[in-house]
Length: 183
Image (tube, rainbow, N blue to C red; front, side, top):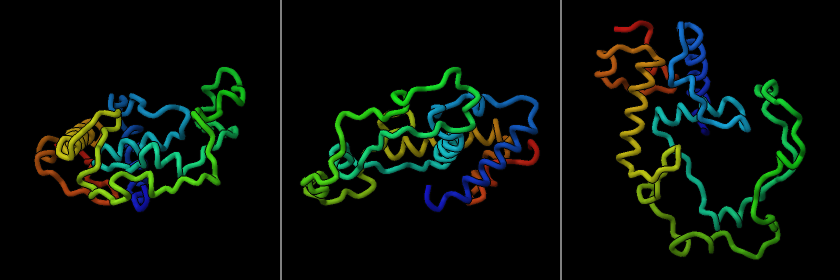
């Protein structure tokens, strides 16, 4: 999320305010998309990413195996879900699921794992996946973001059709996603 933390903070604050001020929770907010293994704020990060059309770059499996070490120590479960625990989990329930151990002294050169002899592709030529794992083109990814933005502004932001037709400019305070009253 990098420099998007300010936008995320305002997005979360305004979403929570809207959720509390509405008589019923909009369907868009009622359905949980992120597992309870992760902190609750990731749900908001996913929503903001979908609304704005943000995406994350990940290394290939081969590169990831060469540069990333997986820790299998017992993590603390997110405290916001601690009441949901029906029974205490054993350390085996928390351990990371990996095929092989990371070797920090591996002789594999990370650059050798990159496609095209390490020559980086332009971002426009990288494969895109939607948040649910479907292959997308740049245009279809942007179209999905536009549709989700309109749905979010209508259901959560309580924006009227006149406002939605204007295509408001995004700002780093997420104010363009929320309206005071329906038009």
